[in-house]
Length: 323
Image (cartoon, rainbow, N blue to C red; front, side):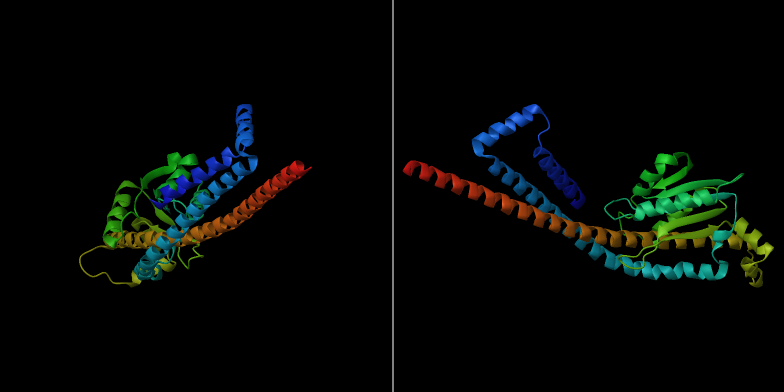
């Protein structure tokens, strides 16, 4: 509702701005006729009043959107901080496989469905494209899974053939782990991968949300890396209880890791979106206030000039009658 009202007021402001400048000879003639009938000063003050009204309405909408984003941020921030404890044990156990070179990479770009939130979506898309260039090469394949309409709109321009799956309206309702687990299961069923690279904006504060990449390796790559040694080689030190094999344990571990990391990534990005929207709407409100001050000064000058002109005309007419 607020975004639709903001677009409507923006269009009204642009139309009022466009109406103040003559485009054709016919419009110029009509403006001259109106100036003769009503006076050019009165027309200009009316135009300025219309602009002031549009700017004032836009300022009210941006302030309201800032307050709504601030109220939503409090609840989402608490849930985001609690979700960080889900993926941290996996980093301690498996480390971050960012440097592991594989053939099939899938970049999961987490973005928002709505705009007016600064450049967080553009940042995620830029990082995703950079990862594609880094991991491209002979006998290598990189695909995209896009969460959010804004990321999809940007990636579809030049990487349409690389997009395997798109998911939207993820933040329409409050998220829980069950919903994200179902989403993660759908991705695992429909996409073949050796490594999943999740790109999202990690929330630090209202003004700081750097782009972050989390890597989840497939069970086959994890087993291969553990046999090769290194940090993943420490997995052989653990004893497996029950009748499950090492491959089955790694399969379950990989699926659970992906759902936990994706849940945290979606919450972190949603929190960053609200923080960015707060900052963007605050800047818009300040810019609208500055524009309103300039328009008020212009209106007062124009009105004062009109009054001065009328007084001069009255005095000149009186002097002519006396003379």
